[in-house]
Image 1 (cartoon, rainbow, N blue to C red):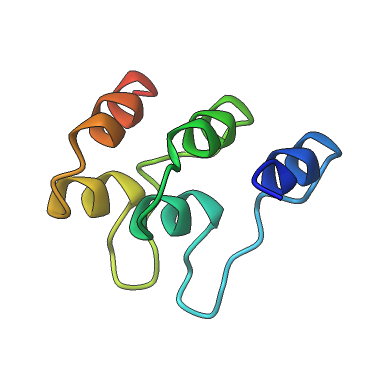
Image 2: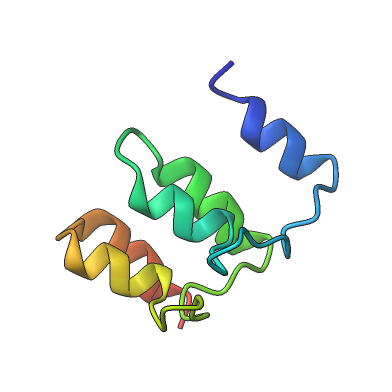
Length: 80
């Protein structure tokens, strides 16, 4: 089951979908705990923008910085 998100993404899932708060999949992957670095890397490779702001004006990179998730910040900064 842990490869399910990658499988769905690789089969052409629409990554531009947003929730009611304007959050995309990358934002959600950064926010929630767990081994998300491979998923975050895949989303970025597929074109997700870690600097896209949600309805509250916060980006995935902002969330990673706030949560002090250093490994995620390094990955997100590589996208710049």
